Length: 113
Length: 113
Image 1 (cartoon, rainbow over the protein chains, first blue to last red):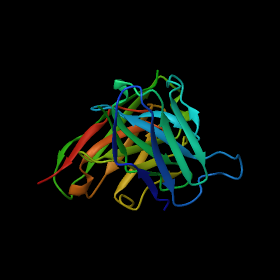
Image 2 (cartoon, one colour; image 1 turned 120 degrees about the vertical axis):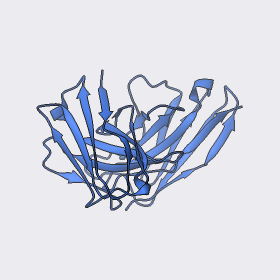
Image 3 (cartoon, each protein chain N blue to C red; image 1 turned 90 degrees about the horizontal axis):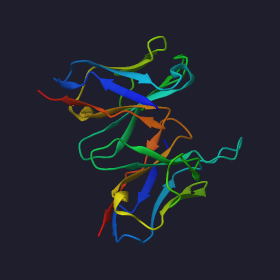
């Protein structure tokens, strides 16, 4: 099974600051066939269902603000949120869908100071 | 607009069975793989099962393999999750997902005597 190690567990920032959340996979998520990384990022606001932010490691889902940026390849991935807004208060998860069983990172709780 | 509405949750005793349903609308159901993902209270996300668009193949993690069965009725735009031999650790909110991009609102399953 692919293990997803996500960090940090939590972080607190002020509005307007930038945050980075990291996800490391125990094996490469890069497909040799299409050169795509099978890594997605989700945002879960309190009391809501998760929402897809980023897929293929760096492609923003339609309607997601451009302050959410996904990067990385192979085994190391980052979600960067620039100019954090109060509405970004949420838990964030990475997901590898390169192989079954699909596995999520443990989550990062973003708090706004 | 993608809509996924889960039903069938509730309180069930350990060892008993429960069947969840998810009615889909707003997209061509039989074009998409579908999945179930769960979240225990206060915990992270755990993938539970996936099924191909035709229903010909299914996938499970070891934690539910042999106890849970995912199925679909493409004529009725409905996804199912049959859960047998339920355990206390199966207590969670269960989400129906389109691939891994669209999520329902979730349904709570509590396994307790």
